[in-house]
Length: 76
Image (cartoon, rainbow, N blue to C red; front, side):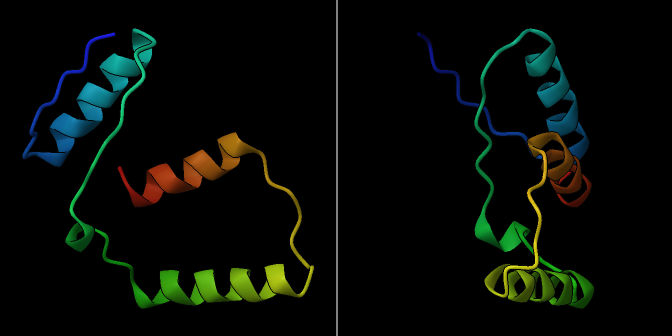
């Protein structure tokens, strides 16, 4: 196994590289600084509501592909 590390400064380039790696079936890991994760008030409220629903036993199981689509909207 070979590990390649790259620093990419443009978000659109990250998206393109991800697509290429996925097409070739190459496993990858993306590391981003914590300060890149900024959530809106709406997103935080949604998270808190989901967390409350989970603890109250009100949530249903979601398919990973559905979860991945949601994450891709937040982290393009």
